[in-house]
Length: 121
View 1: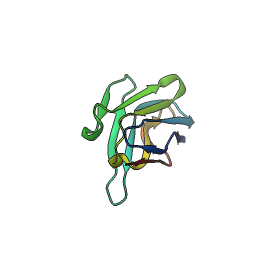
View 2: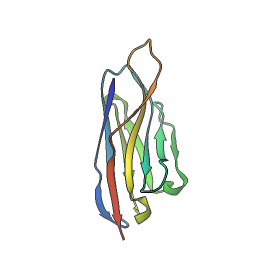
View 3: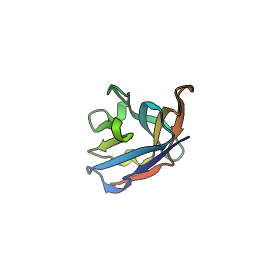
View 4: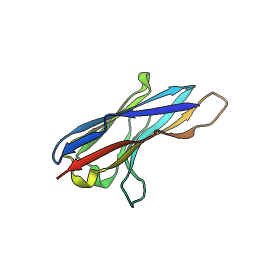
């Protein structure tokens, strides 16, 4: 099994920055795509950003130009640098990884427990 642990959330004023980290551990054979999703109260979970093992990235429209996703494959870690934060960025942010635990099993989606990001106006 694979475990994902997020860190770096918190309270910040509008216009500020935060950096989220998510480290994968456990029985890891390979990790394909990793990403960040968020869910605000009363809303559906939405994609924030994703990155493949080769470094290709994809961003939600609302964060393009403000957020940057990166990863360290050697450390099984993905990062999300969030700049120019807005109150509407307030949500619980979840880390996601498509990971395989052995060469005989296909990738499965794994989720972290979530970290709260609150942006005050």
